[in-house]
Length: 81
Image (tube, rainbow, N blue to C red; front, side):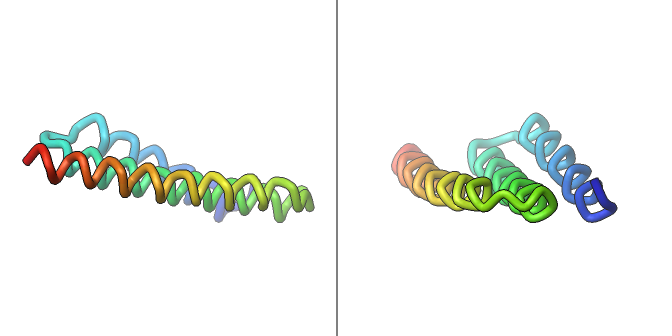
């Protein structure tokens, strides 16, 4: 893994810690969103490195599911507040 991968991995770990330290649901949602973006970036980086186009497709599918899930969580979170 190159230096970019390590930087993204470090940022993903920090996002995970942000989720653990969150005080309210909105902070947890922000941390989850940040974590998924970094994991998608790692998936795309690895797929480019190994040359697997199917992995890019998997990253795009994961991104779409993540966006949909975040929208649903934000909707229910706003209704609860």
